[in-house]
Amino acid sequence: MTHARPHADSGTSRLAFQATIHCLTGCGIGEVLGLGGATLLGLGNLPSIVLGIVLAYAFGFGLTLVPLLRAGMPFVRAGGVTLAAETISITTMEIVDNAVVLAIPGAMDAGLGDILFWASLAVSLALAFVAALPVNRWLIARGLGHAIMHGGHS
Image (cartoon, rainbow, N blue to C red; front, side, top):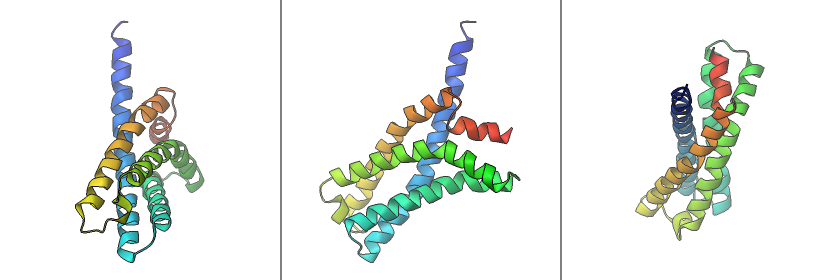
């Protein structure tokens, strides 16, 4: 019996790590396209942040929704599972990611050719991962978050 708990904790931690990588992928794609595109278009800070957030949610949700639909899950159910599995994780990542980018002096004014643009984005996403990992672990341990999505596959 003493080994059952560490094994369960290990599985929960592994699933939380995988869920956070999954979330980081969607958020990262959205942020790079959003902030990069907004910078390329010469948009101001607020439109840049809004575009990055919208695309982070779109890609984050899409990376979960599309496979569920391809597996034959009805759209309404797949949408519900996606919202339940991703919303808190993406929100955590977006809060941290944007707070860090805004806190780094000059990051929002850096151009696509500036190392500061890419370094601030990398640091912000890395810190967002660190913030979202315990959130995902907490959710999964309670049968929420990505645990819901994996239950949808069974």
